[in-house]
Image 1 (spheres, helix red, strand yellow):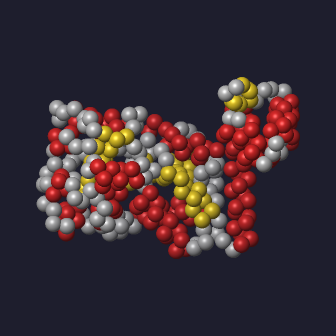
Image 2 (cartoon, one colour):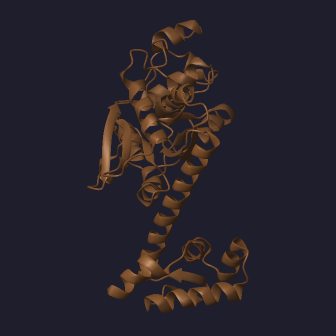
Image 3 (cartoon, one colour):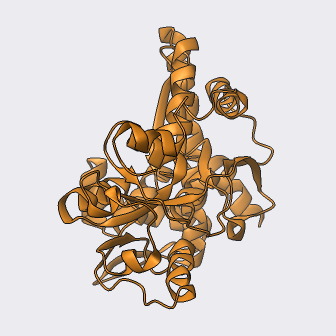
Amino acid sequence: MAQIDRVLRSNLKLRHLQMLVALDQFHHLGRAAEFLSLTQPAVSKTLAEIESLFGLPLFERSTRGTQPTAAGASVVRFARSVLAGYERTRDEIAAEASGASGRTSVGAMVSATPVLLVQAVQRLKARSRRATVLIEEGDLARLLPKLRLGELDLYVGRLEPAYASPDLETEPLYEDPMVAVVHPGHALAHQGAVQWADLAEQPCVLPPPWASLRVKLEQQFFAHGLHPPVDIIESTSFLSQLSFMQQRGAVAFVARAVALHFAEQGMLDVLRLDVPVELPPVGLITLRGQRPTPVTALLLDCLREGVTRPARRRRLAPLPELRARRGFPT
């Protein structure tokens, strides 16, 4: 234990950590060497030196490439965390030196991006124009590991209860139900009340089978004595949803705030269909006990402000008024 503590505290250098992360990323000595602008023998020699320091094999070499051992996976996690902290500190110091206001990295779900997050960034920019916000979209399974490693400063999206953990600080902001949407020229867009039977005969864009929302949506079809649509595309990408709605006439399911935002721009229409699926609230996740950087703290304030202010829903007209403006039945 003392030897490992000494290695982690004193012997490992940034170049060692960068090499370990590259090996974990590429699973190949040659590609890692190319990425690091080193020769393959140099990478092999450095890896042997690091393993000698720990007294443990960190990677297994085979014809399939390099794979981390259990100890190697732990050291790689440590390396990623240290490098993320290094990059954050470097960016903050550089920002201060140049007169900018810093940088923050946000992991976001599409349910929060076009409305809550974009408006919060607008408020942030009004107060600190040179602040930089990096936004990475994805789901919790992909974004939470990055948050824990320090590669992201916060997460904005639905607070799935299955991912609750003592090391995470969660803050619900608002409820946002699901609605069904189509492109404005779709036959169902000009119909009054829409039934689930109408959707069963349509092409649909649905979440992947492993997503909890997919199960809940299919249960709605079964509850109405119907089989789910057979003509489906599986995607969590909002760009894919828009594309298949426009080019294939598909029905998609999105958060109501997102749907109203794009309906106001004439890019889609919200169907008159009750979608009674239980969804977790939209909110924030940060690492418990980690002090946010100044620009992250400011963005958090802007996110909360967007929820508490009276004009929170972007001053959008209610759904019936939007439909009346465009000549659809209300």
